[in-house]
Amino acid sequence: MIILALWCLAPHADSVEAAQCGEDPIKSVTSDGGIIVMLSGAIFEVMAGDTIDSALWLPISDVMICGRAMTLRGKRVPTRLGLVGMVAAW
Image (tube, rainbow, N blue to C red; front, top):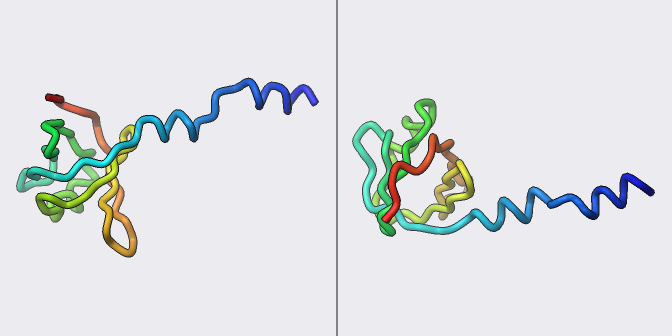
């Protein structure tokens, strides 16, 4: 009973994560895939191990950004990148 009460009072990770998600089309990607510039002006640095995928992403592709993850949408199997973080925002 006490565990249930604590669970009800604790903030849920899903609701926090959902609040940090948003869609933003890609404006450009550096040739090495290390930097992705969004149409909104936000600039993201991609984790080194994921640049092999991000280098293939095209401008105007729809992506979902949730915390430190960026997911390419519109494919049967979405491709997900780890982000080092936002470099700049406009």
